[in-house]
Structure formats: structure tokens, C-alpha cells
Length: 277
Image (cartoon, rainbow, N blue to C red; front, side, top):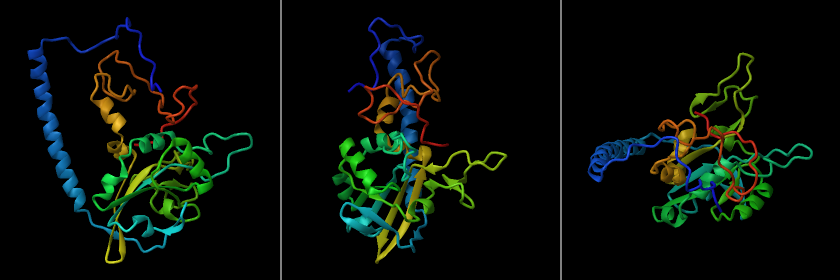
């Protein structure tokens, strides 16, 4: 299935980097390598700092619906020491009369992330479990999961405070709605700039019978999970998105181009990006 139609072989790019000798290319590439190595060391230092974050003990009894029945947050660890939860955007609301999209489907951006997940055996080898959690009920989650061909665990938090407490369900009725550790922007009239389900990832640790929240990230913090983007970042054309700093004339689009992986051959539907700054 093609993500993007190939360009005709005789089409000439509007602009491209200069063409140089192999020797000059190696000089430019090794200069960039030095910056890449510095970035890798910076990332290692940031990861070390993340491992030293303080923790918050979870004192609320969250319950989830799974295909195996009702499960507690501790049950989702499946006996392992760590748990990673991806907060998958999937609305629990019923669709308006005569409409199905997007209420019957999970978020295209979250679906893209789910397509990029590793085989979970590699996480299990490091005593870590993974599950996706959405506020949609299982009656909506399971048919969509089968359609996407996914095998990872996926639980419903419907009817609990879990999504609200981890700031991935934004309700205008909330006293102080926040996302990505900041208040949700409001218009002069007090209307929220966005609401509803939002993406995020949260990490937990269990020790001595207690469960602790160790880390959460949202918005562009989820970018590190998207291997499709990282592969495109290594190419000359990049992600081809309008916000990128690319050479003048490089192909780019400002539209939200991601779709469910079974929809790239059908006409696109208008969709807004699921990520906020």
C-alpha cells in the first residue's frame, strides 16, 4: 500500500542541495556527525536526569475494562516491575445521527504511533509491560483493534477518573484544565482552544506492593516513539511537513497527512493534527 504516489521520473525538484564531489560530501557529513554525536550525549544526559525524577504514589483505585474482565492499575503490570501506558485518543461519545467518523475510529495520529510500536517481548525482557488505554468502551475499541490487526493490550478507562487525572481528557467543565503541564489556552470569552481526548504516555513503577507514577509526556514529547518520522528525518526530503526548515522549493504540505494504514488508497477526509505544542 503506497503512502504517497511516486513522482514521475522526469519531474525536476524545484530546488535541491548542491551536487559536490565525494570528498566534499564526506567533509560536510563528518561535520554533521560531530553534531549528531553531541546530540546523542545530550540525550544520554537527559535520560539519566529522567531516571532520577521523584515519584508520586498512586492512592486511587483505578479500574479498567479489558477482554479478560475488570482489572486494576496494578493488574495491568502483568507481574512486571514497570508499566508503560499510551493514552490513545478514542472518544467514548456516541456519534451524531447519520455520522460515524471519527466516533467509531481511533485517532489517526495515535494509530500511526501504534503502528510504530516494537514487539513487546523486548520490553518484557526488561521487566516492563505495555498497554494502550482509551476512554472509549471496549465495544468500540475491540472492532477497531481487529480492523488494524494489532495485538498489543488495550484497556478501557470508561467511567473512571484515570484520563482526567492524567490530563488526557479535557472537559470544558473542569476548574483548571491543563495539557502538557500547562493550562489549556482560552479565548477572551473563556472558551478552550481544544478539548476532548488528547495523546500522552505515562510510566509507572511498582515496588513493595505500591504503585508509583514516574513520568508522563505529551504532544511532541511522543515524537521519539514514531520511527516512521525518524526514518523520514534521515532522508533528503524529510517529513515533508510545512513546519520543517527545508531548502526553498522542497516538497511540503501543511495538511495533516497521516491516515489509518488501511486508508491511504481512499480519498482523504479533513482532519486536524492531534498534537498541540
